[in-house]
Amino acid sequence: MSFQHQLGSGHRLSPREIEIMRLIAFENTVPEMASKLCISMNTIKTHKKKLMKKMEVRSCAGLIRRGFEVGIFSNQFSNA
Image (cartoon, rainbow, N blue to C red; front, top):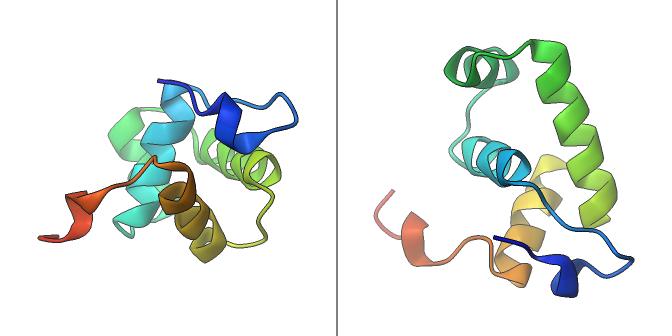
């Protein structure tokens, strides 16, 4: 799944980046995400930095808002 056309600047999100965005949206902490994905906390932090740069936002809240704007998230949160 690629969101290149919505992001502009030739950016597109990897499946792992989308997975991390979803974990952030469900309020997982960095250590929780690292444990669930079997990767280091530094790797999670790097993914978050790259996501924020690609999505042109400054915070996790902005990241989630932008995710809704470009269609990464839909009504899946209505019952969460």
